[in-house]
Image (cartoon, rainbow over all chains, first blue to last red):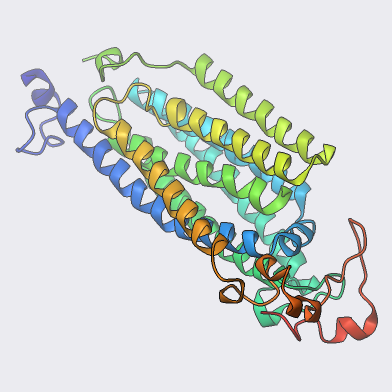
Length: 215
Length: 145
């Protein structure tokens, strides 16, 4: 694959024979990183499963206080943003950098929409006193497990929201590089890897939404 | 090197991505429809988790390109999922088989125990909006574990 190396001499690290191998290694590394991210969230999902098992009534009643309309809208927003990221990767591989910039800009706007809706939800819970542990003072519902639901709700959606913010930062950086026309058939690794990260955020939300809002 | 030779598998095009997106939207609709129907508890948990699993598989296989990925990278997500299942499964198995008082007070495993009668009542009338009696509302966190 000497043509590859000649086409993008600065991109190819000397210990890789060609760009294809290098990109494969990069994606492999990203998948391993994503598996540690899954571990991070898995602990919270385990805590959720455990406390839901211990306090099924408290969790069911508390989850009725979640704002389903906003949660469902956010589900649609995140899934659609995954589509725009997938399309951005597609056009990055074809070297159509202007489309990449446009699609990533739309994705970041979806991210902003998600965070704004999340903020509105948090505000409602804050005002109503639906808060974790001892801070819980909502008059409309009380009982064993109820405040535990809100502790897990804020932990899980909070950690997920942090990931959305990081993802938006990554995609902004990639969009900036696309603006300079850096990506093409030989080199699209940054778009692919930050895209993988964004898809994982979507994937985690796919589980968070039914667990926290609908059950 | 063209995009088509980028990796072993065949690349998906925009049309396929939009189809996957449409499928994800339909499945989201299914989840919400099932939620509206108020099936039994077990059925709702089962369907919600099943649909979420199918959705995440669609995202992983098509959007995350596991379809066209080579070799061991495909295995990472599957193994991660397996480990998460083991973690959750064995944790629940532990708490489900414990001596009741080894679980938190007033939890479900206390329900056949005589002390459970001291549990603070679940202050909630039928959904969706409820109000607890004022006296209870002033000290809602009193007996919380």
